[in-house]
Image 1 (spheres, rainbow, N blue to C red):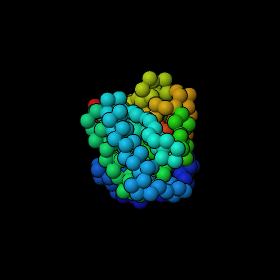
Image 2: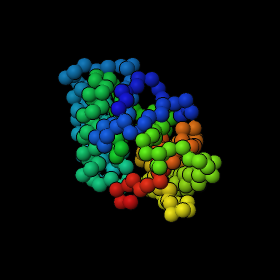
Image 3: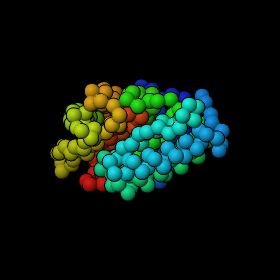
Image 4: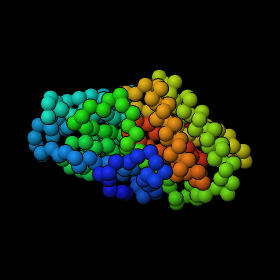
Length: 250
C-alpha cells in the first residue's frame, strides 16, 4: 500500500502509477491528503466531518452515489461518495464506511482529502467542489504479478488498438447514460474477451463526463499501452479494462 500523497496529481504521463498487487481488497487503492489547512480534534469541523461520513454511507447505499454539506462557516464540510455501478447496496455502504474510517486515519486533521477503494471513492473538503470536473486527483494503476492479464503484450500495437476501440465505446455509452456508468465486453479472438467499465460522478454533466473520460483514455495510453490490463481512477471519473471479468454481475 502506498502512503497518501500531499502533492497534486495531474493527468500527465509522468503522474503516479500504482501496482494493484500491493493492496488487498480491504486496503485503499490510494489516498490524497491536502496539508494546506488542518482542523482540531473534537472541534466543530471534526464533528461536521463525523456527521458527513455517516450521511454519505446512508444516502449512497440505495443508489451508489451521494453528496451533501454539513455545518456552517468554518465548520462546514462538503462530501461526495461514489460506489462502482455494479456494487450492491450493502457492499456500497460498507465500502463507504471503511473509506470514512481509513481516510481519517491516513489524513488526520486535514480539511480536505480523497480516498479510493476498489468498490468506492470518498472525498471531502471545506470548500465546495460539486459540479466541477476534478482533473487534479488522478492516478494510473496496474497489477504486475499476473503476466497473462497485465504483462507486456507481444503485439502491443494490435492489442491496444482493440483496447482503444473498447474504451471509445465505453466513453460513448457512459456519458449518455442516466447513471453515468457503463460496462462493455469485446471479443478479440482466440477465445478471449476484453472487459471494461467506465463511470463518472453524478454531480457533473454528461458533457463534462465525456471530457473526463477522454482524459482518462489519454492517461491509459501513457501508462498501459503494453499492458493487458489497467485503470485510471480520479475524483470525477474512472475507467478500467482487463482480460478477465471483474464486475460483481460479470
